[in-house]
Image (cartoon, rainbow, N blue to C red):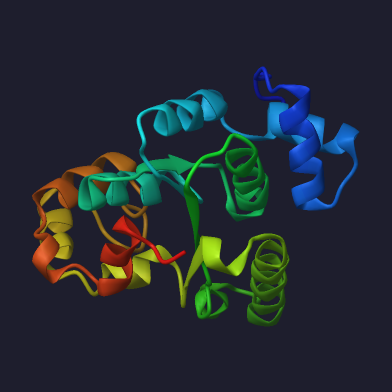
Length: 201
């Protein structure tokens, strides 16, 4: 449990979440009602009611970049990689057309002080998430989102104009990422990111 505000999740949804995750109803109830960000269920229901797909992402910077770039699906940050399966289970139970974006963090361990430990943790966390997500419902980036953004020249230039960076103390600022993405050209954006507008099923 994370101590977040509980959301009203019907028992039939709880049962479907339990089946999706292969866990007990009690645990599924707790996860569905308190693990996800406040308003998550309402946002998924709203997207479905308006015929919009839902793209589940790990954090706020992912949502800040992809919302202005894609301009189609409702992009929802779930609060971390480990919560993507829970979010997917809830979205599935609510009948949403959903897809998840998973950071593979293939080289993320290289940036850590204890590389051996970081490498093992990255691999385990990604593998655990992918075991629970249907392959057709997720896109796995080779590394972190920042590695993809580094291949988007107009975004990088706009981010610098806004005083942001892709690494270091000025990295991962959602407001700067959103402003840069709004100014950047979609024409030079990485294909992997553009494909999330209509991901394969």
